[in-house]
Image (tube, rainbow, N blue to C red):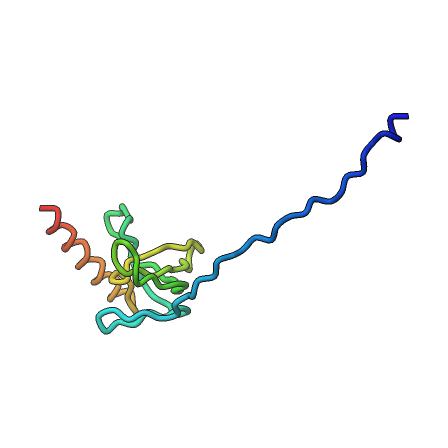
Length: 114
């Protein structure tokens, strides 16, 4: 008798999720340096706590010209596959250029703290 008194359950009607689309920038130019999505670049992670930081290679996946700190690029790391947001001035076309950019960044940060 208990089986006769059960109510039929109707399927739940779900609302479709509205996804806000934003226009993704494919290229950004800062101080005669152009950063484009899909390009390979070398960088040194500024949060690296190594005594001798090393340059890493990655592919630029996104550009952020209006970042709250300073213009940045999104980079997918070739070694670990991690995605990082790196200041645009730390990205270079070669290992040597990336290290030079990092050393200039470190010296400018040191002079600001004094």
